[in-house]
Image 1 (cartoon, rainbow, N blue to C red):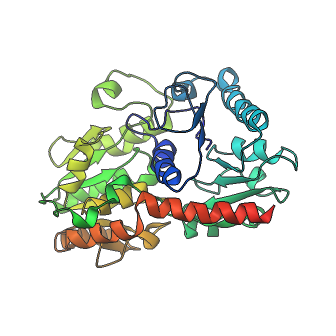
Image 2: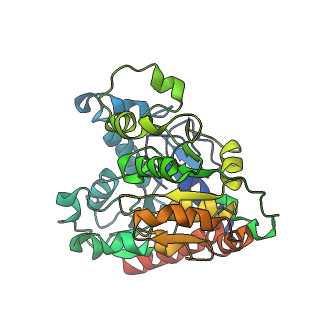
Image 3: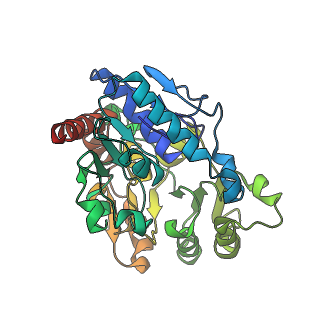
Length: 369
């Protein structure tokens, strides 16, 4: 299970792929799968063996010039290849490392184990790699939604064995928990970046009179005080926040809390009237969606990417193609039954459901070799 060199598994707060790996591995092991994890040395997930080159997370290195950090991923991937060959008992590599994981593992020989590479991101990226990819009958891919795979270049889509929706531990037993008491606030979860549309949500909050809380980092800055200490930055997310979002952040109608970690994050979401998704891109996986539903909070958003696959319109949330309809849907969300969202999460988005689906894909990959 190759999680990469950027963050530990599980991560401390933000860490999308690392959180998914941390959610997937325990139920896989309950099903009898032995797991060797490739990550950083500070990972604490219970596995059969840990492979690492770096003792600590390399995420901060991403702020340095490319020519100073372009050995980080190759060093990690080299360790993965060595471990696979030295052990000699690896049946399958499940890879999560963007681009470099796919290309490195595809370059191995026919006698090396087969690979399932999970695509967690926008597949319009890396067109030269994805548009010409050839897995040699040994490397296969899966998506995190059907919509994501439908947008893949033909060469990459030819290697797809299916999609697996994301899961959250919050969905375990969600149908047996008491529905939460609701407040009037609305939340947008996730990294503040143009594709998430926080500027649109903030503008609508002011124009239509609902209270909005933004919860997520701005670039590498996880709190307002961290960002306030920076006078200049070439990070595009910082520029977006300062130019498009911050003018609406008045501390009353719109608040930015920075990164909010569990359990405070879960309390914030559970008490919200809705989680808002004013997306400007085709969201591939939607972790924030399944977490919101598991906490009994409907999702209101633009009908893009994976959202129509995850949200049952009129029952667990509302979706629209028109941004000017979002405020009315935020108001209507207060009338939805939180228990419906929790029941749907317990049925579809538990770690056990995700693990069982991955075992199906593992068997399909192994059968193809």
